[in-house]
Amino acid sequence: MSQAAAKTIPIGPCNVYWGDKRLGFTRGAVTIRYTKETVQGAIEEMGVDVLSKKVKESCEVDIVIADLNLKRMRWLYDQANSDASATTLDTTAYQSSTTATVRFRENIKLSGTTAATVSKAAWVTGTVQVHKSDLSVEYTKGTDWTGTSSVGTIKRTAASTIPTGATVIVEYNKSNVTVSKIATGGKMADYEAPLRFVHYLNDGKTLQFYAYRAKKMGASDLAISIAAEFGGIPMTFKVLADMSQVPGKQLFYWTLES
Image (tube, rainbow, N blue to C red):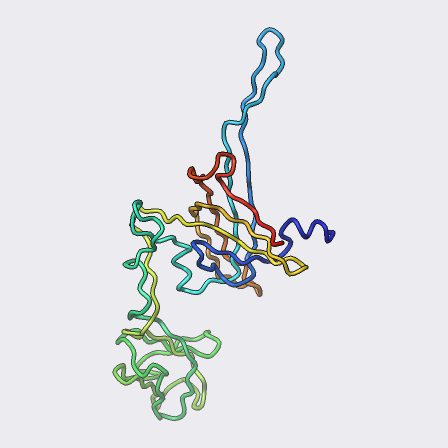
């Protein structure tokens, strides 16, 4: 792409903001889909079109976020208070610090019949599983190992099939773990906020897209896969008109830093 073209259109990663809150890091990818619908008018006797009239404009913005932490995840699920206050994220749907039961997995070395302690120092009774290091064998409680949930200790039995000195995989549930939590679903409200992305051109100047009103559309396909590279999280926004603006300038605008 020529330098002249690079000064007028985005050619690389963007900083994406919704309601001036950053979505992910500085590697967002953006596609803007602006369309207009027209109707044609013809002279019946001649069968040819003699006019074309625009009846609708629409704009959708597709964004792929390279990364989202949990605090920003609430923007992905656009939790809102109500239709009347749609620019406020719902504080009851997002709680920054709470507790939850979490499943843990760790490697523990078992030597002789000496007890070893898991990193969380306790677990929920009945939730422990002990596996061979390659997960090919699940060892039997009471036969191969014993444990005490209240203090998180585990040890081989004298007749265990676990070789002494072997490292095993221990999986267990731990309650009351301090976490950041986001809960989603069941509130018929829609979050709306200005949408902008900023791209830094090769000359260091900023190219910005700004939409007055944007609502997230459709599914949130968050894929955690075995691929070496994280594919990102796609989001699609519907841009709505701001009727307080001058007609013809009501959907979005571009700015190029001088």
